[in-house]
Amino acid sequence: MRAWPSSPRCGPRAPAAFLDRDGTINLNRPGTYITRPAQLKLYTGAAKALRLIAAKGYRLVVLTNQSAVARGYMTLARSREINLKLVRELKKAGVELDAVYFCPHGPDEGCACRKPRAGLIKEAARELSIDLRRSFVAGDKKSDLELARTAGIKGRLVLTGEGRAVVPSPGAERYRDLPALARALPDLSKEKI
Image 1 (tube, rainbow, N blue to C red):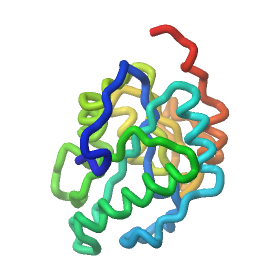
Image 2: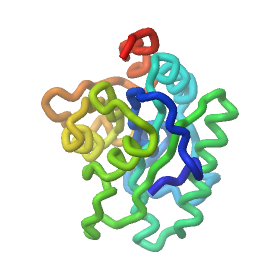
Image 3: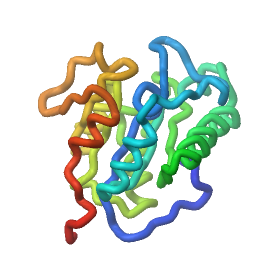
């Protein structure tokens, strides 16, 4: 389900950085839910890292599981408010996200959009003309790495949020944080497709 924008800008085919939200871009304490916009706090350096990733030729697409909606901890409208605060805060810091997609379902609902299933990636790829072959998933949870494997793209683990406790799957790359990942990415902006 797309939280933002109301109608996506497609543009020419490009690779995407599929980024987990909580624990990757913003602070997150394991076992807690962000249920109010005021609780959303960006990691220091997250905006700078996202600007660098975009400058290297990647679309910035946030993918987030938000089971707090299904669990009754917040409404669907409140979840959208939180995602829109993320968009506004990053825009103030000079970051233009391409889209934010979220799954409001619980872990036992069997939906196609809950990570590690690839429904959100499929929706984004269809709406944003994404080159999946050169795209990757970055996150702090095992489900993010499993999502990458399910989608057949690279997985990159950041050791923020819950990342330090995750045993990476074979082939998954590990980075201290989002800025370290951004610096390590190849620059695709000058490549011809």
